[in-house]
Image 1 (cartoon, rainbow, N blue to C red):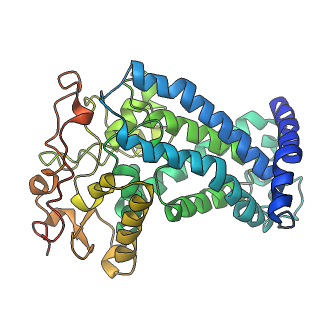
Image 2 (image 1 turned 60 degrees about the vertical axis):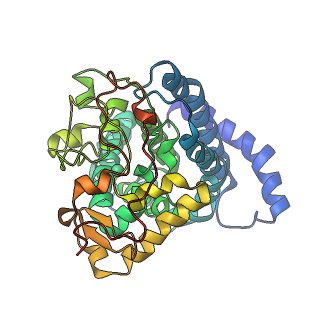
Image 3 (image 1 turned 90 degrees about the horizontal axis):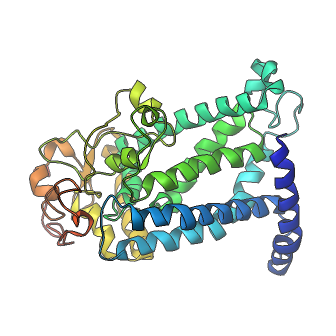
Length: 383
Ligand SMILES: [Zn+2]
């Protein structure tokens, strides 16, 4: 165990005894199979994460922005949702679902693996037991690799894009955008990553650290700042410039350009698999599809309902399972292959791609009117 983990466990004990147990008692939830320490750990992690976002990343948006905004109206639902997720939903989800789930693997020889997985990394290479930091690094590599391919699938499987597109629909991508997403999408992602962690044999305490590192890098990479890590380091780790290009609005004249930069914390996977894009100036963020862009005209609840509506319309149709990039029919919400759509027509309602930030200080706030070309009018080529 890392020395820092001992301090950590004391803090978790304290919060569990003085804050979590009394609340669980009052709600009569104390007898469930989860461990109250998990709620305490999730709350402490959340508090640290919110402090880092608020005191480090948020000032970057004020003093060194990639896009200048005259107001931050569109970031508010994301901020509120992040607070709700980190301080409420995620700790409860850990307690009620993730921990009981991890117990399914329990009961095996802890000398082989702390999760009991017969194919744990330490079962293959016991040498790793004496090199915990190296082991943690290898865990992280595998975790991040799985995340990269999961993220590519989120873009290529139409029903998953129906959900993930909600994460992309914001026209003001900020330090609060990382958690923007539906609970359905969050659940699927957590389960996939948790299974990977359990199979590798990651101790649940260490898994929390894996997640925290991934989350913090993502909070920074969504931050509206010009910060970059330099030409060498940005080929290893995702920086805000790199991830901003992943969120770019489709360019009708270069329609493949936005299929780039899928990495979570490490950019090496994009370099290795040919999806890395460097050297482009920052571009406006958002999605050209009017059905998806309409998320911006709703509050928190409306945004979720909008995303879930297109998910439901897609997941029950066979074409919702055929891989490929899609837009959604404004009337039926049926997925339509982007190859069959006139992209110039599609993005006109959002904005013509703005010039680079240096030339267009107001890029993030330019008049991207939520005027749907959409509703009631089939998009070009919808056939
Ligand atoms: Zn994405």
